[in-house]
Length: 499
Image (tube, rainbow, N blue to C red; front, side):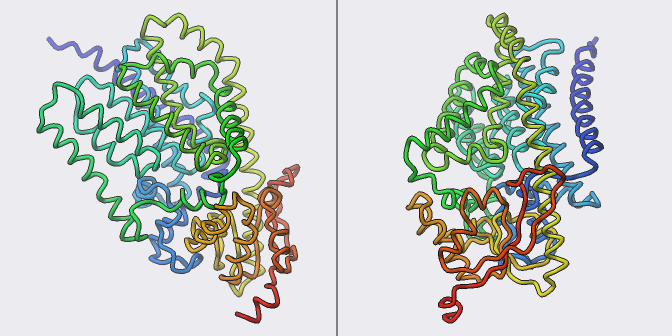
């Protein structure tokens, strides 16, 4: 007679993981008072969905919806959820919760694959939401959580005893979740193709599946933008201009970002050396090395953006290492690491919580107030120069120019020609030329960006008259760098005459 006990017990544990994760997101939703997000980039996703629904962009004139969308998969899932949910912000929040559930389940099943028993897989998986403050990356309204879930499921599929077509299917999709996951896709496919025991027919089918799963997204990007890859990475690379920075500065950026990450997950990151099978460990190590190396080479400052969100794709890898350690001869050492981590995990979680809450109540509230002022006081829809391209497009009714280039592709060329090769020295000139080309009447700028990049002073040096007209209101005690300001712009006399 078939013993259903283990099957039912396994299903019950999976259900418990799903319920616990869903409950956490429901509690957070109640605490924060609804579907709100700490980052402006979340509203780029919502605005892109708006443009697809409406068929045109009334803010960034002539710009396709996929411009500014790094993750085609994330946008497609958002559009699907919006079909059944009455609110677009709620749809984005539910997408974050879905990614959280997928992340937890991927971790849980990967732990089972390497032999963890009893409650350990569930504790690791649900604990993965607390680990290094990961929960707040799942709440940011961006593609971070989806990328983490993809890595977790990639590890799960790599460690399955029986190969199925699911692994190549995921490998074909991963580059359109995050471009850097292309490296992991290639490595995973190499494992599959080099393994013994698979027929030639299966390997051909695997390659075909991987390619075919990528085709819809390649076609979508090509039809919508004229490019097979998103432009967002290039826009940020050219604007921040780290490629030609001095090597000591680049090393400092990467060292600080990785040191903060190491403290946040200390000493659990040491468990990565326990990862098995060996082929999976090698692929993950090569992926991590190339990932960090590529950021060091071209975009080192990016590793600290948005709470170091790009580094969180390594969270499931570290936790998988913990599972491998607990289910091996290294169990005693791993338990020791877990005990020590109890001293560090609250610090990391608390730091992410503080950052999350500050952004919700500080700069996002200030930005919302500034956009409300724009809608109420600028009815003639003047062109506004911005660097945070999301919320002002989502909630505002004015024409916009993104000086970074995420939503205004023409701006990328100015930074590529001036900012990038000068390591940022000519950024002010590039911004002034962008302004000269688009004739904005106002500038909306975060004080932190103004201080860091000299936006106002740079325009003034190029002959522009810049006059502050409004300061967005944040919650009491909001730090001044988190406040948005609106400036009225007047072109240099010579430029005005030429136009």
